[in-house]
Length: 245
Figure: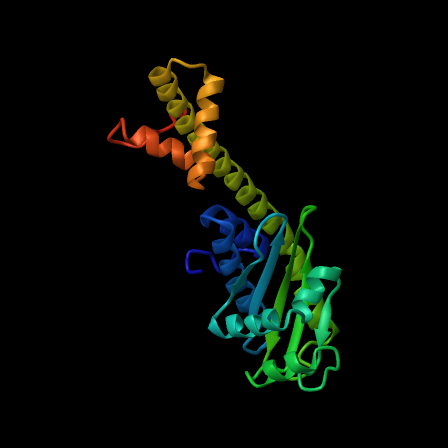
């Protein structure tokens, strides 16, 4: 966080995070630290934060401002429900004024209270279709958020949404590029193996692919693995796919 100018706005700091972090997970961790610092300053008490991100066809991702927030967030995920998860699912802000007395998640609340946190605020983050997220804010005093405090947290989340959407989009495109590269590399090995079989057996490409497929089934290995084994028996280095710069 030291590289972010203290005088810059939250929006500018979040934009810097998108540019300066290598992946979505790193962005989320820095985002949590920024949220905790900003809210602690505005509320005059030690706030810690966690964020949960759910993306289509991806495992749920979580990040925390510190180890305390990590433990608190893990409690919620162990129970399978709580303010943050409910906020993420419903798209509504959820306030637990006193974790010792809230009837909605009593076991979760008592577990969090034993960790010294008595107010929890779950704020949804609006993302692109197929992605959902929420910011979980923990305070060490009961009824810590008055209406203006909730408004400040909601305003921070609103400022964060654009940066988070961008980070998720960049991450999705990077994953797509990685998947495409892996698929092309897999295709390279299979094509080379098919060529070897065609040369050895003087057969067509279709017949060579049939031989490879039967070997894959017989050995209970993926087609790419069988192909790579065959190619490696003829070449000292694994096949590579060449991409234009």
